[in-house]
Image 1 (cartoon, rainbow, N blue to C red):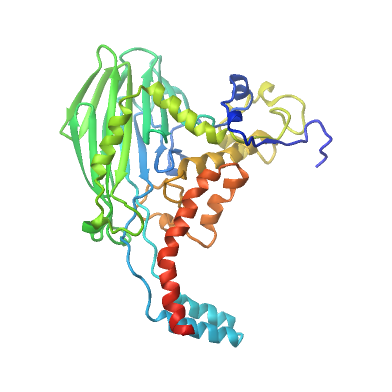
Image 2: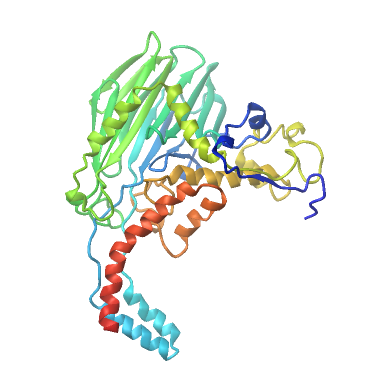
Length: 463
């Protein structure tokens, strides 16, 4: 690349001093918006927008007549700790060594499979927060859905009957809750029905007109395909709690069949989701755990009630941006193509990237050089790591923390062949060293039983 050209240059800022980790100015945000944008609700899980605080996560679908937040908690897994050392392994190791000494490497590889343990356990989804509206899917317009990487906020807006509806979602690390606000441009127009559900064994209780609890348990052993079972008596227990606030003179909440909450004629609604589990570390059997997930979730929810929506969001932004704003990357002098000096935002056929959806930009990338799309992809990777791996959380698995299936691909486990390492490749180079801490915690926990297994195998072979 000719770095002497006016548009062929790269600028990366990685401030080391905390005082330089500042929010972007309004001018900077307008010039270089870092937003993943959509023009319709999510049709598939992979179309939804992920939000997370390292431990608690959600996928925002953004439907109009009905919507859902698909919920995850990083400690929900099948299975229990155990001793899986194979007494036959020392003999297998001796055989493998002999084959290697003979130069029979393919045979040695085949025999080495006898050293492998059983299958890993399976990451489990917490459940869904289901939201039902009276709006038809056919009567809305001006739909927009976006994930703002500057603010770690998912936004949905659309217009029905001249009224603009807005939904805002974020997942707070300081307060350990998911926060959602529904509002409308005309007072009294926010109405919906809320419910909690899960694919796992669970029960739901509406405790009053502003609180709902879902309690459940993960399978105590790896489920077979097509079921969600196993020995539930020994599985990890979990609780999700939902609290809400409403505004407006005509706002009303009603309990439906002790299972749902109906909200009518509000100016705005704010609801908060907290979750906890009985997971007490990888070496503690869930049946022996003294942790009460319901008490923990309700305590977290109660603490969040001391703050307004704006206060919760301000704390969320201070925390998130102290990490995200450490690195900026600029791949061109402006929002231009390499082939033209006309700013992309000034081209009448484009009217800036934030008019076209992100999918449109990806499709046209081969013929329309779009350096800001590369910037967006780079920062999206940083956003995901911040959202799924924080100090004190579990290690990021193959799906980060976001999964809707009880039998996800490759169990969504943190495989050690290369996938886990790839999750954390950007941590240090992208100035997110704190986000790497769960990786070292995980490796330390593996060493406890790993050292026992190694001693058991090699002691009998080497004497």
